[in-house]
Image 1 (cartoon, rainbow, N blue to C red):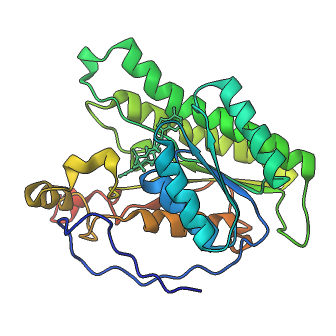
Image 2 (cartoon, rainbow, N blue to C red; image 1 turned 90 degrees about the vertical axis):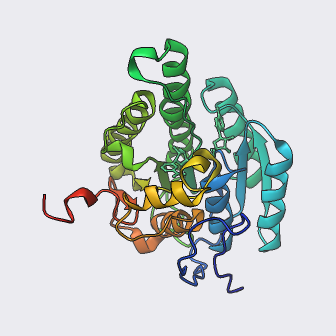
Amino acid sequence: MADLSRKPDSPSPPGTEPLPKVSYPEFLRGQPAIVTGANSGIGEAVAIGLARAGCDVAVNYVTHPETAEDVAHKIEGYGRKAMVVKADVSKEDEVETMFKTVIGQFGTLHVSVSNAGLQKDSAFLEMTLAEWETVIGINLTGQFLCQRAAAREFLRRGVVEDISVAAGKMICMSSVHQTIPWAGHVNYASSKGGIKLLMESMAQELAPHRIRVNGIAPGAIRTPINTAAWNTKEAYSELMTLVPYKRIGEPDDIAQAAAWLASDHADYVTGTTLFVDGGMTLYPGFAQGG
Ligand code: NAD
């Protein structure tokens, strides 16, 4: 397997702390996966990480098909099958068609990562209903629709012993803001708080069917969603006051967590949120007294 040490794609951005050299055990061979919002940032890294761990991967996108094709080519570069599939995750008919298409092409699914998300920031008093509904519709309802479609396929097929001891693995991309309140972002924080209990309730309901459901709560990860928080020296220093581990997260930090959660190495893990945040949720303000 290629030993690809992680390097940020962007040219010399602030934050040059050493990154771990990581490889991926091929513990997901024969397990087709779908990743939503997989043509950018964390979703792209997760799609590629799952491919490196052995999955054929469906790359969902809603805009910019060319970047989805790029991700698919990278997946094929690891010797896996890839397909690109367009759907707005907040639209039930598009999600249903997407899952039908992917299952038709791959034969089944074993891993579903609901990752698509966005921010539409506004002070609470100024926030419009449209800003609220857009974020809840994509970040929360989108995860409900996609994971419901995935769970139906996992249940239909059941456990295939040579492939995995679980009937399916669902991963919900949440955020540290499922627990940290965020003024100026009430729609986003509410969507992530909702994902926490959506994930836990699905996990409780589906565990007897040997379907595992977990969340990942990223801290500050270097992606287009938060460029302003890391692309200047000043912004990066300010960001580091919130990160005890003193480096920004890279998308591959999340991909590693997703691959492990999807694997049988995590078989007794369900209904849990894995915080991948360099300690952001450790109340860094209390490090000096309090
Ligand atoms: P990003 O903007 O790079 O990627 C978001 C992806 O979601 C894009 O591919 C976008 O096209 C897609 N998307 C948006 N609306 C969609 C829709 N209606 N249907 C389908 N796809 C849609 O941002 P990212 O940082 O990679 O974010 C990925 C996930 O990680 C999000 O759920 C985000 O909330 C979460 N997250 C990110 C961070 C971070 O620091 N980057 C931190 C915590 C959580």
